[in-house]
Length: 200
Image (tube, rainbow, N blue to C red):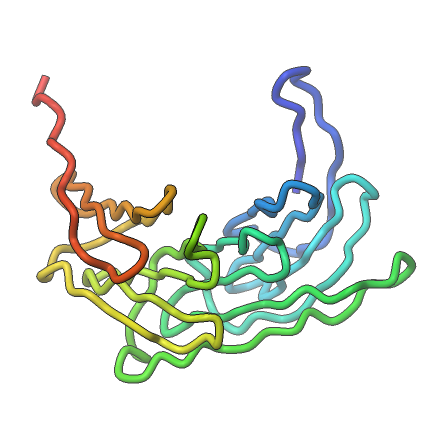
């Protein structure tokens, strides 16, 4: 894992904690945090949390499936990973500055959607930081509450979904055929679809 200063165009640090490929990395979105998470491939099966300022691995654990998406909570106290039949909340506890601690993970309660492939995840913003949102490849938009329980869903009517983004009070879902749909974070109510770019 390499961390770069984009202004100075120099590498700040490098972490060697995976034996195989890395599927995804994510910085904490908390203003005063210096944490970075790296998720190994299905062959590596390791999730690591780094402090990129002190160059120290603060937490680590095994992960049993291929991860497709990751998102940090706005307060930096946990992050969420998603994949095939997988939505998991990972909690960060106060760690020792001298040793790496085990990372604690708890699976979300998926109910009837336990066999779905979740392709992206985003934690809530502004007034909805207690919620987490995930999208399945077959277009089911899910809202999880602070207890990791599936609280609401909405169906994109069989449109294939690829990615998810939260901004202020809205959720943006990137779908097949170049469609971007906007929903409310509060209740997953559909707002509008963004106009398609001109074909040129």
